[in-house]
Structures are given as structure tokens and as C-alpha cells.
Length: 273
Image (cartoon, rainbow, N blue to C red; front, side):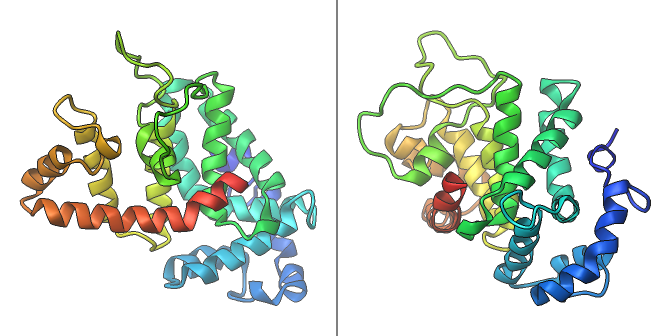
């Protein structure tokens, strides 16, 4: 059963979908910011055509407020929000398929809880926050999440901790002699999702996202130095540069630029939601 069907958002006759469509015009009258299209089914097209991520997030925040228990407490608005985010949610669920045969049911439940409790009042980036919180909670429900208990020997910026250091997927075992507290399971998937959301919202170039992931893979190799978690180390950058046929300086410049955008856009908002 698909996520849309699980949530009653299957078109054209899902219960929650029909209710959301019926209430769309009332929402538009109450919240003029939603007057970007005539009917709810047209909203995805508007989002895809938008070149201003801020305008899209304003619409998402409005739906998040209407649907949250501490906002308008309207389940239909929460459904409309999840329908908009469904493409990203489906990709997220697919990435978790190796972990359980009940992933769709679990992700649907966590999506619903996230939409009803999302911290809209803090002006968060709705798409990235809701999807990442859903993945985090789903992984915890599967019993695959654990906290790092040992402090690092030096202070590391937020982007290093959240996006670089913990890169092992939850199903990859810890190797003999390796510090089991050095990474948090599921962080690699979180990184993939964050980069996907950032690229979709037009915040980071898709190819720059690929460079970050390639650097992460190269940094995990025994050859790579561990400075700056290895991500921007000379060896890792040299490997990616050779594979791409570009200079190491270009690889580092593009990676640093993408990390700066990601940290400035998501680090505080996601952690506060």
C-alpha cells in the first residue's frame, strides 16, 4: 500500500485528499498567501515552477500552521502539506526499504506525527525539517538509532557534526577496533535526504551535492587523512578531482560553498524543530 493511500491522500477519492480539496478555498480566504493557484491539485505545479524557495516555504509554513495541533488543528491542512511533500517522502521510504518490510506503514505514521507537531512558529524550512525529522523518528522506531556518547577531542562546527562526521548507514557494522561511538546510524541517509531537499529547493547545485557525497566516500577510505573529518582533506579531494577530471582546488571550492549554504540554511532550523 502506497504512502498516499496509507494517509488517505490517494487521488481522486482518498478521504483526506477530498476533504483538503473541499477546504482549499476556505483556507485561501483566511490566508491570502495561499492564493497562488485556483485549486489544490495545481499547487504542486506552482511549486515546481517557482524560482523563489522563500515563496514556496511561506506556503508550506502556512499549511503547516493550519495543520498543526498547536495551530489551526486541521487534519486536512496537514494532509495537503504531506501531499505536497509526497515525492520526497516516497524516495525516503524507498531508501529505508532494506531495513523492514513495514517501512511504508512506519513512514506514513511518522509523517503524520511530524506534520501535526511540526514547529511552524519558528519559521523553519518546512520540507527539509519535516522529512528529516520523519526519517530520524522512523529509524529510531526500527531500533537502529544510538547517540554518540564520547565527546570529540576538539570542537567541531555544526555542519561537521551533522553532515560530515557521522556517515555510516545503519546497516553497516562497526569494524573491529573501530570506535562505535564515532558515528550515528542513519546519518548517511540524513545527508542524502538533506542534499536532495536542498537541491530540489534550488539552494545547492545538484552536482555540488554529488561532489559532497563523493568526498564523503573518498574520506572514508584508509588513504584519506582525518583532518576536517577527511571530507576536505587533500587526499579525498584529490581522488574526486581525478575521477572528475577537474582540479583539487575546484572540488574544495565547490564543496565549501555547498557546506556554507547548508549550514546557514538548515543547521539551526532542523535542530530546533
